[in-house]
Amino acid sequence: MSRWPKPAEGSWTQHYPELGTGPVSFRDSTSPEFYELEREAVFKRAWLNVGRVEDIPRVGSYFTKEIDAARASVIVVKGKDEKIRAFHNVCRHRGNKLVWNDFPNEEVKGACRQFTCKYHAWRYGLDGALNFVQQADEFFDLDKTQYGLTPVQCDIWNGFIFINFDPEPRQSLREFLGPMVTGLDGYPFEKLTERYDFIAHNNSNWKIFADAFQEYYHVPSLHPQQVPTAVRQPNAGFECAHFQIDGPHRLVSTAGERRWLKPPEFMYPIERVTHSGLVGPWRTPETYLPPGLNPGGIEPWGISNFQIFPNLEILIYGGWYLLYRYWPTSHNTHKFEAYTAFHPARTVRERIEHEVAAVVLKEFALQDAGMLGGTQAALETGVVDDFPLNDQEILVRHLHKVVVDWVDEYQEERSPVGVAR
Amino acid sequence: MSIKRLPSAFAELERFTEQWCLPTEAERWNMRMATSMLTMREFYEAFSPRLEEAIDYCDKFPLDDVPDDALNLLHLIYSMVMVSMAVEIFGQPLPTDAADAVMDRVGEPVP
Image (cartoon, rainbow over all chains, first blue to last red):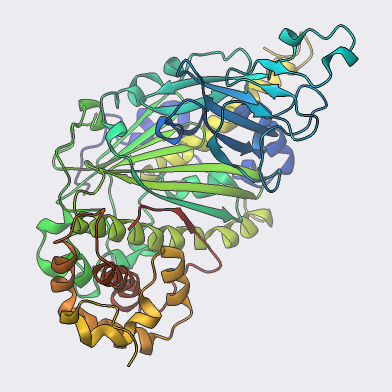
């Protein structure tokens, strides 16, 4: 029946026996108490992607990031030594928020030579050092070297800036990412700098939206319009060619003939005219694709979708990619950031191709987002809490398991001696 | 007569410029949401036979030096992309089942 071979165990899910095959609870997505634990156990311990090196191109370029899940505001800045650093956005004098423009809760970006606190004009260098104190001789034995900005761990992978709120992360960024994700090394992210950025404030737990993008079982039913009416199959299913799990991270690859190689009736008129659409521009400049992009060796390969724990997704279509981040703002709300990234357009025609891809992406993402309010409300009734997941939904199963595992581990570490382990 | 905004070869589309020459996705999206399918179909039907030609016309210019009339035409093309989603795919302004979901484009290249 299945078009793509499953692992010897008979299913992708059984290939990873720790996942089990039983029904799954989504209490991790409805409970305020669980969210409080998740903040500590996940968002204050995992490496979190907050941007790209291109976001701060020059010495003094900076942006701030509000991370409610960690109750933190962070400044990310490029120093005089070209090194990128992150600091808590807190003045060491009286705790004023250091960097903001119109309203303190709004993220900002810009460039400066130093950071000056609005309140009493204390000044900090791009390296976080306290450089100037107004009326310093009024203080009592103030040692300026002890009052620099509080650093946040910060490291870079392939141009992606990650931070970690744990002052002593258990793993380096590269160790944390592991071999499956770092298999993307060499993909030319740094060349794909033409971006279309999106933000959405969604009324669900962050994991419920992540789930929508880590299974394609829902595609024929929720997004039937992805196939023009004339050629739509009423009972179509969707089978992914390859799933892979590595530590807390997940991957799914799809296969399939390129949409534009199919007969014309499989495309909408706007796609045929613009040579772009649901799967992006038909042609992209030559792009190096590392072997780790398609670890299942799928042929013909379609896309690979890397779900990087906890809240980052990088979906690579070949010559362009898209990125999603899910930032929880409460147990039942989150802020969603997304962008599509292309080789910079060389011609107006290429720019139109990119516009089409960015427009189509939003259309179908809105269908996914449209489910969220209803799903969250239904889950919160608590009427049902054993949800059957199929083999195509293995990554949904894995995300919820990993989050619960991290929370359990955190709690065990805090249990009284002699009780835990 | 009002001022001509498009290259003369596309004069028959002048009547749509007031509504659809919009430089940002946010404006185009909001216009789509605020416009009836009847009105959008009229724009779509009128522009469809000229779309390929319009893209070719704009493509003659370098991206960083598109003259004003061609830039207006490009913005009209972007609106055609926006409207085609409603006309070709969903048959309604909002994507089917998008419910109360909102997704704002907050960054995009120019033009």
